[in-house]
Amino acid sequence: MSEAADRGPDGDANIIDTDYEVGQHNIQPQIGPFGMDIHNPVFAISAGAIILMVFYSLALPEHAGAFFGWLRPTLTSGFDWFFLLAGNVFVLLTLALIVSPLGKIRLGGTEAVPDYSYPGWFAMLFAAGMGIGLMFFGVSEPISHYSSSVAEGAGSPDSWAPLAGAAGDAAEAQRLGMAATIFHWGLHPWAIYAVVALALALFAYNKGLPLSIRSIFYPIFGERVWGWTGHVIDTLAVFATLFGLATSLGIGAEQANAGLNFLFGIPVSDTSKVVLISGITGVALISVVAGLEAGVKRLSEINMVLAILLLGFIIIVGPTLAIVTGFFGNLGAYLEYLPALSNPFGRDDANFSQGWTSFYWAWWISWSPFVGMFIARVSRGRTVREFLFCVLIVPSVVSVLWMTAFGGTALSLLQAGHKEIADAALELKLFTMLEQLPLAGITSFIGIVLVIVFFVTSSDSGSLVIDTITAGGKVDAPVPQRVFWATFEGMVAIALLLGGGLGALQAASVSTGLPFAVVLLLGCVSLVKGLMSEPKAK
Image 1 (cartoon, rainbow, N blue to C red):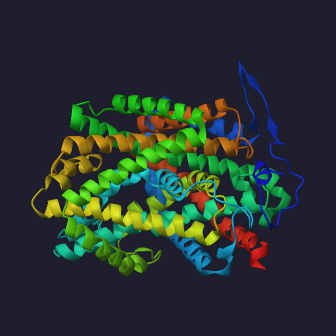
Image 2 (cartoon, helix red, strand yellow):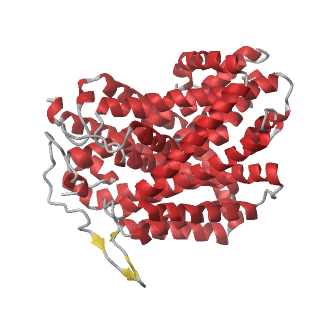
Image 3 (tube, rainbow, N blue to C red):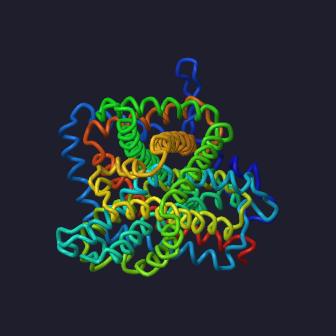
């Protein structure tokens, strides 16, 4: 039985009877003074393929840049309908589970109690799931959607406006722009994370299987999940996680470099970004060695406090009344436009649905093994209903508030004549907005710190997850393995940045998100089967 089973289940549960032992395919090589405990062949295939990709990007940067530049639009335009359809399935399933009798099932058994308090749990959920993205896109995305929606050519084939925009109508363009932004940061991404996290927690804590992606598929494949079927699933999960994280690290480096240039004049260059990624990866290594409690949890709580302070500052010194009323107005606009924005077929806004939504869904899907496993590790003892409500609804509401405060303030300033916000590069829009408010130097510095600490928490928690997968489900594998993966995350981000910039990072994320979307849809079937076999479901 697995290590997860050793911690539970507490009370009634339906343990899966399998002869598989955690780590039975593992090997324990000795590399110098360091002992390893790695799953064979998942570790070898994953590490080998990633080393080849890094070598290719660094040895042939021009060729790599051209290839990645072709890959992303090809995948997002050809499979946009599939990404949107899959996202809708995840949302509908999670909402159905919240209101169904299956929501009473407790992760870990009927007597299980939560390992973490609500504040600590929420801090880790949010830092892992959204951190860098909210900092980067909180101002830039509402401004981008508003500008394209209100423009004279909104609705033309070349327009990037969502749903044909609202040319010349500033008020409706703002509603549509905010609805489109919240659509990308609301129910859909969190539903993707929730499906993976719930399935992992159920099969680890209630069924006694290893905490690994392959365990989710036991109801479908049976004992074959311990063979090559499972090896392929776990290897895909490693690729998806690593490239999804690399995209976020690249975005974080872009914004941190832009912010440091804005405040201190540090040059914006590939060299600066490489130094940033290297330095922050070094800090992440310290956190990785410290472990989940001393490292990830503590950093997540620090970040949550800083994020709340910055959000509170924006609400107080910004257009407070407009933010408060805008929260409810934007939430209403989101719900009004949700059916049209989530429609996968017959879209006339190809640039928006393919260039924005399709990429986002692929990015969230590629992040899902990492975020899902991390959430599963910290969510034992919650009921399915409590878990889904807190992982799906609460973060979505916080995202609405965040986007309303930052995006709404930026739009108010833009409409008051501060066109420099719209003219600034994506990575500079946050700092350009803060410059128009009091205490700009302090808040911009806090913004940079938030980006960097979100950077660190993403890297170290991602390393813990990849290490668990490549150790065959072991959650206490030797520390050098975590160090190896944390180092590799930084190397992949650097290689892709040098071999094609942010576009290369995004292309890698999309290319791994596509096959893993198929895996997750199959996992939805397995999740329902697993929940229905629980004693409380009978």
